[in-house]
Image (cartoon, rainbow, N blue to C red; front, side, top):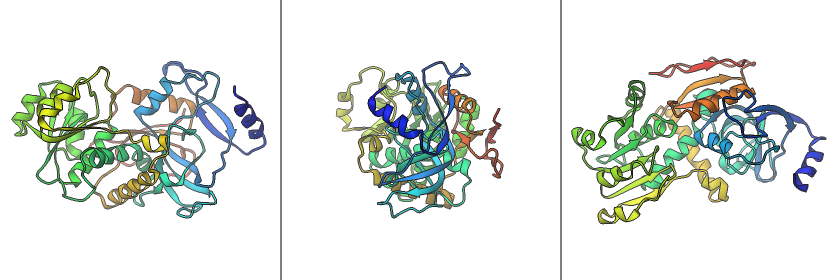
Length: 375
């Protein structure tokens, strides 16, 4: 343990405590002790930060990847990026938010995560939470909404203006996942014709209900299916599943001067030269780059404020599909296990207020929110 960590531990003994769930070693999610609960020092906000009492969090694939890559055995690490909560205190330089504000945000990989009673976060990253959504539905939205926005704006150069994409088409590879479930709705708001892939009848129904104009079976020949629905070439492609595996398909079906955006790492080298003959653009999208690099943080808060407006206006809806009641080690383990399985539609949420007065999960058509009580 470094001298810095030793000093922080000594100082932390004299500070107020809070509950947190994290790991000290990397073991299988099948193990009951994959996550542990601890009492840790309650953080204090720096000048440009706010202290948030976390009401609910959500699990994303990146959380499971971070856990799988953990190597600092013995060091307690808390994960969790998506948050809805109440501002409890603000740093001296923060003037946009006040104690008592209900906010939502996605944090960074460089800070302690949200699976704790309290978290500090840069004020630039947060936004006022949508007024018409409960905590569960709100917690599901930050990371995936920012990613979907980045695909459209940074990947496709499409600003979030209603109808601006009318007459153009987008192929969304993996429409039923967390990002795809939001991207479909945002793309429809922009007026795009949305073609999305899905794998089983339940996910196909989910994707269609979110607004996809055409739903393709990714188990079957996608080139033939695209031709059959009248779109042998598409203007945009969002690869949310397998950049390497779908590379040849994307090169084939992207229209001249089209744009491809991908959020999934390549497993083997791909040849960008394949895109030159059509003058096609390729963009990596990684919403955590802002926070990790301390770059243009304000954009993230601005995106979320627009997302809140779209949610309150009914243009997009929450993608929460499963809720675990209570901040417990087992609930965090099970939620991570769900997401790591790659079989989850929408988002998995942890409701921290299981023991307090809080409305039941609402039904989200066509799928009902599955609620799992704390053990």
